[in-house]
Image (cartoon, rainbow, N blue to C red; front, top):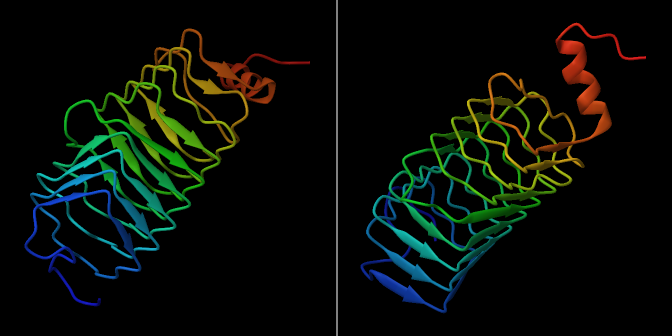
Amino acid sequence: MDSTSESPFGARDAFADQTFEDLATEGAAISGKDFQRCVFRRCKLPQSRWPETRLEDCVFEDCDLTRMAPQGLAFRGVIFKSSKLMGVEWSGLGSLPDLAFDGCDLRYASFVDLRLRALRVVGCLVREANFLSVDLTEADFTGSDLTGSTITGCTLAKANFARADGVFFDPQKNKCKGARVAAETAVLLMRSYGVLVE
């Protein structure tokens, strides 16, 4: 299906236990929908808008959601796998969003003013992204590349960056007690304060 602005899901408002494959709609307005235990596979929905929509226990596999607008979207147990989510502004989400990313492209994304405790961002490309005033307590970034990303005003307690690449954050601008980082990251942090590491 190829169109602009119209919802690829028609007039129905609720969907459960369904699989959607190969949908292709740029700039789709997907508003006021309720998806439960649904799978979205190889769907191309760049610049789609999702106001007042709820996703519960849903999975997105190999989808293109570049520059989607998730403002007003409620996430509960949602997993994105091998999907393109470049340039997404993750702010204004429904309360207490619960989502995870596995092998996704999150370059240039912005996570602002969110509570994302225990967030999983595993094996993802997260270059040039912004994490601003985000609660990332116990978040897991194993195998992800955060080169060039900004992390400021965040709570990083017990967050796991030990096997992530390109990680850098200022301990004075974040709450990072118990955060785990690789030795190379620790060296960079010390050097940023003018400490010579031999």
